Structure formats: C-alpha cells, structure tokens
Amino acid sequence: SVLPANVNLIVARGEIYFSQQEYERAAYQAFLALYIHPAAEPAHLLQIRTALAQDRPGLAVLLAQGYLLYYPGSALGYKLLGDARVAEGNTDLALEAYTQALAAGEDAPGVGDALIARAALYERARRYDLARDDLDRAFRLTGDPAVRALRMQAAYRAGSLATARSDAEALRGTGAIPEAEIQLLQARILVDEARAGDTASYERALTLLDAAQNLPPDLRPIADEYRARTLY
Image (cartoon, rainbow, N blue to C red; front, side, top):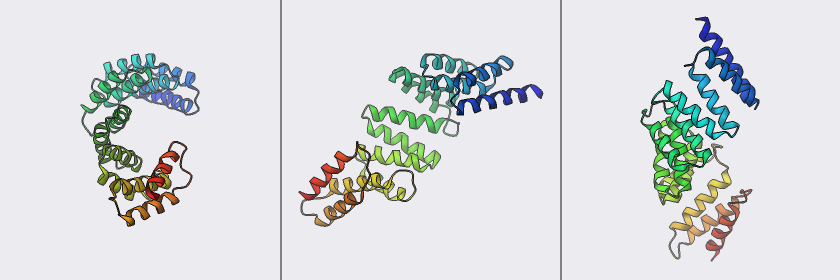
C-alpha cells in the first residue's frame, strides 16, 4: 500500500540523517513516521538509537519501553533497553534487559548483539567465565571473527587457555584484531603454561614478544612484564 511505502521513505531519510550525525533531523523523521503509522518498527528502532546517540539514556529507556508495548518480547527492543540502562549507569537493569532479550530464541534478530553486550558487562564485573560462555554462544550464532577475538580475550582471562590458544591461531591473518595483540596473547599463554627449564617455550615466547610491535599503550606494560619473566 502507499502508506507503508511513505513511512519507509521517511525512515530511510532519517537513517541518512543518522549516518550523517544529524540526530535532531533523524529524530524528527522517526517521529513523523510514527505519527503516520504508530506501529512502524523501523521508526521505533531509529528513534531509540537516535536518543542513545544524543546521550539521552532516560529518553531511550522510555522509547524502548514504548517499542516493547508494540513488540513484546522483541530481542532488539530488550537489547536497546539494555544499552540505555548501561548509558544510565544502571548495570543490574541492563543485565536484566539483555537476559530478557535472550528469551526470544537464538534465531531472533538482536540475540547475538545482546549476548555480546551482556558479556561486556560480565567482563567489567570480572565474571570472566560468564563472559566467555556468552561470547561462545555469540560466535556460534554469528561466525564473526571479531566476536571470536572477544571470546579469545575472555577465555584467556577465564583461564581457558586451550580455547584462547585455538582462537588466537584461527585469528591470524584475518584482520579482526591486530597481529601484535595476537602474538602478545600467544606469548602470555606460553609463559603461563611453561614449567621451569622449558627453554623452548620461553624462546618461542620471546620471539613472539619481539614480533609484537606497535601495541596500544595499555598493552605495552604487559608485554614488558612478560618479556622480563621470559628473560628471567
């Protein structure tokens, strides 16, 4: 029909404004689309994303809750509600929202993103086993190397060195994460697992550390620590 087509065009224009960071214009297009068709799902989603981009988490919460009235149980809705709660600084309600998103079933749009977002909160809380489990599920859903890189880091922090080692090897050459960061992680695993007198492992670790150039500032002290441990 003509009406949905008009709404789709309005939302498409809003998406262009959003991509250009013209958030007031994007928000107006979403509002206009919803005025014409209050249940237009893409307009609801644009409106919530725009509020988040404007750093208006309180508004984003209200908009997400309004969207969920039209689309109860939507994984996308609960994912965005969780994002808004994170922006508010309300971690407990964010975890609750992300968990509700997962109830939609693993095939529902937004579930993978909800798993990744919940894993990030678990990481912040140092609940690394739970973060690893969520990222494992997200990777199985998406097959995305970027998600595998996140799982690699979480697995290492959780002490699942076999998973971290396997992920590191699989990520070489993919571009999902800088090679230097992979080499650093591989060196850390070698040193962590090496026993006294295991010269071959320490030599391999030192080779990897020497190759790990142009690390970000937060990882350089870690590389220095492991180089010192290896030389010692």
